[in-house]
Amino acid sequence: MANIAAFFDIDGTLYREGLITATFKMLVKSEIIDQERWYNEVKEKYTKWDKRIGNYDDYLLKMAEIYVEAVKGLHKAQIEHIAKRVVEQNGDRVYTFTRDRIQYHKDAGHKIITISGSPEELVEQMSVMHGFHDFIGTKYIKDENNFFTGEIIPMWDSVNKERAVMDFVHKYDIDLKQSYAYGDTAGDLSMFRMVGHPTAVNPTRELLTKISQELETCNKTKVAVERKDMIYQFDMSFFNLKQNQ
Image (cartoon, rainbow, N blue to C red; front, side):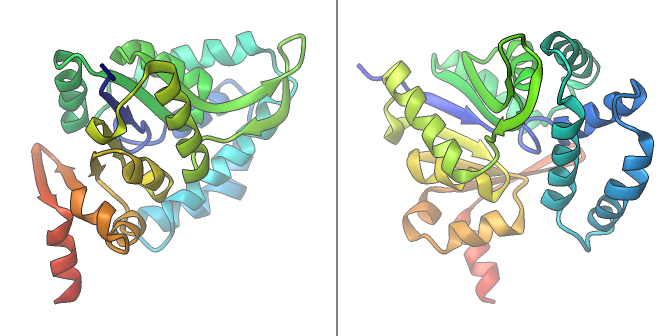
């Protein structure tokens, strides 16, 4: 009998920010990244997003770009140490809805798997903390001596997340029609298409708009929005209704 799985994004879906943000701050504190790079390259994008006149992905991608440059030449052990500290200090800053869904799937005997665009060292630590069966994150390539080369295999886009899901399907004999997915950005759209029970958690407008353009995906997708101590849940049909008014 095939297994049922639940696929979870981390940044913005489980974790209440982006893990790369906490890591960036730690790298600045450790003087691996010059703090001037925050003021000269990142702050403007953060401010635009914070004032809701800019794109959150632009802010995250800029930090990811600097992260790639910063870790080049560093040893694997250095980044693993920082990743462990970041998750120890921040890993429980999660959404109640998603934490409860993880527990639901554990109790139901489902495979719980995280597919995240964050660096794999961070994703591994979050996977251990929250009891996932398996994980995959953005892979930062290392040479034969475990020093980072500056090359990456991303896991924040829809194409690579689809490939990751299929790898897990073959690994664990997963029935996608009975499985679940949780995500918040357009990068998670492929997961939503593939499973029978997708949920958009605090989603971006871009994700909801793309879902609404695909009838089959739209009809099966639920939305959960967590604000303060309240969780609001509705079907995508509600979003479509509001869009058409």
